[in-house]
Image 1 (cartoon, rainbow, N blue to C red):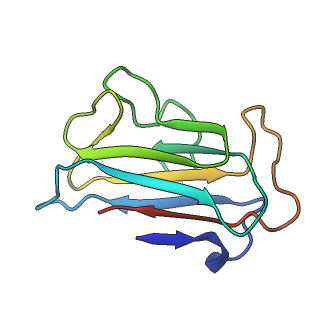
Image 2 (spheres, rainbow, N blue to C red; image 1 turned 30 degrees about the horizontal axis):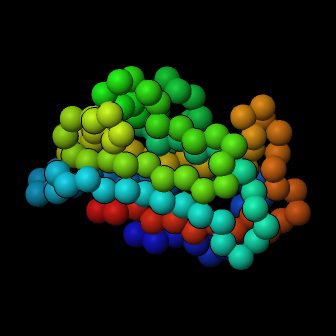
Length: 129
């Protein structure tokens, strides 16, 4: 599933929360990725969290690696998260069949400062099934 934030309107002061649900049966256990990049606009750093809750940027609800590290990206222009159905690994999140997950993104620095006040914060990304 490919997403271009321009198709949903402005993304400057808004939160993008992409929900996807792992199929209850027949889900692939191969390694997948969700990647996001700036598109057609100036470089903007963002905060992103791969989470069990929509619009949540805390580490508490972020998916974790097998080492306990939260899947978060802060102060980066582009980001990606690795995942698969099954156990978490050292660099990938582990997902459960039938459960919903969220990729939450906002235009803020790790200190909470807005990074896009000029209206064009277009971004493209995709979630692999």
